[in-house]
Image (cartoon, rainbow, N blue to C red; front, side, top):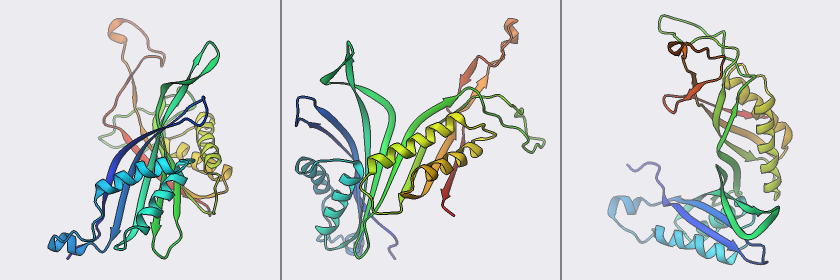
Length: 279
């Protein structure tokens, strides 16, 4: 018996140059699209009469990008999800994720260039839309690959020890991570850009200022701050891998290491996540 299933197109890359004025704007997006519904005949009998080709779904992204003003990523995701659901009678749910890549306008001698850009950070702004027949459109926003590091106000001590524990307690360590956060909009809103800036600002300010006793401690404080700053969201889910930086032993070289020389490691790493919601 066929269980839950879906299909769609992922990794649809789109770059739009907005040329309304001589001061061009670059919108660089990666779009994932998926449909759910009664596709039993497709799986069981090989009957494709209800299957909208994923190539068509890809083409919808490009056509809608031309027809519409992209605006906020949430707006574009909503338009795509609504179109896909409405154009396929078999589908009952359409899901769209839009990830926006950042570009910075080149600054030449103190003047922003009209049409030259440099790549931004690895950070992505994420927007998701879920359109389901008989239900209201559901929207969420998020951040991915937001790399942050603090070299003070970070500790980890007081943990249990057993015969396998080798980790030393510390009151002064590097805290580095790549933040992934996704929040759910609780109210009808159109100010997605403002909410994104509010949440992002709250996350960064709290990370910098919080006197951290653990990654969990700081993650929760960041979530609390985001909910306090932005009343339009009902909950936020945050994932923070602990990007370990190990103190290098310089004693073989007759040198001290007063918490200055570290080796960054990529694996293995701690992975901490939690959902913080309003009480």
